[in-house]
Amino acid sequence: MPSTRGGAFRQNAKTHTVVIIGRYHVTPDLWGGRRSGFFGEMQLKKQIALVALWIALAGCSKITAENYAKLQTGMPQTEVNAILGKPDSCDDVLGFKSCRWGDDKSNVTVRFVADKLVLHEAVNIR
Image (cartoon, rainbow, N blue to C red; front, side, top):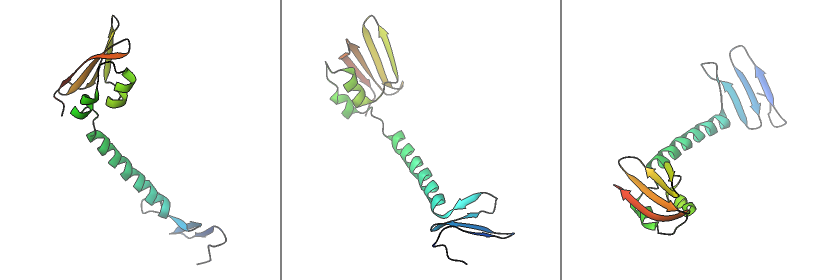
């Protein structure tokens, strides 16, 4: 096999093709697609990392008793959003804004007047 130090090396044959660029090579797989040494491993690592991140985020709700305890009367809505995240729903009626985080089984409801927390309640949080 010729040296690959000076640049790219190409070898064409009827049954096998190898393309070497730098230190890594690309070969066709059995099903006609392409896989690569370094780049194929990186793609797999990215996919595994994304799945792990998705699992971690799915289990990490900001709606906890600990975060609920941080809420205080007079706190601006931006601070509440920093603690609980983006609300799932908000309603604005006659100057009162009511926002809810969570679902029917477990939730936190906060009411604001002039962008300041005035009332908050929690249902079935841990």
